[in-house]
Length: 199
Image (cartoon, rainbow, N blue to C red; front, side):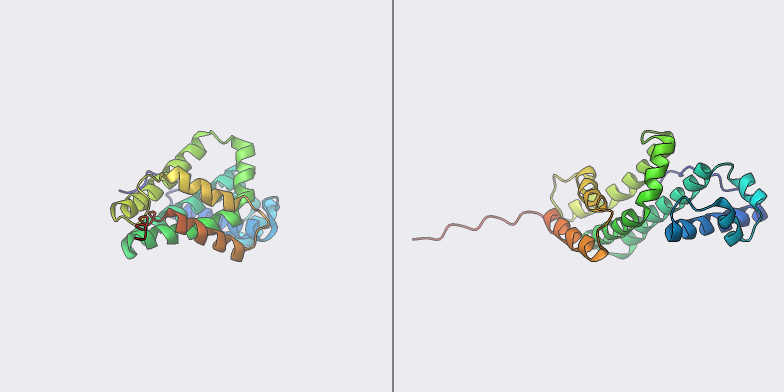
């Protein structure tokens, strides 16, 4: 099942779309390097456009943050569908959770700033969350059907566990992946109890 469209203001005219893509790419790279308080002038310079072009496309910093966030969420969702096509059910789920972990570790500040600006219950965040849930449930349901994860698991359980790792903003990637390995082991069905030894 394909995801529902994410909130996006990408223009359809070719030249406008090119400028939009340049600005979003420049913003994503600049935010990753210098944080989300980077000047919009620096982003426009990196994108190779004038500041007026930036403001025509994104009238506020929040609008630009939204566009970068949507692109990242779209990438998270696309990876789920790619892993579903390419990997066995548990491997697909594990690969997606690992990629989602990396996303959370690198994008926490972006999400936090948008939450302050829009509110965590805003229609924008609800649409993004729905897309992630659709992608994640596809992988989890297939892993359940294959008997490779606990049948009682819900996606919210899994995402809360992974989100707990992401909350450690100063955590090293090596430790984060080690913790995720522990989580993945816990998703597996419980082994049947061994029969008691006969005396």
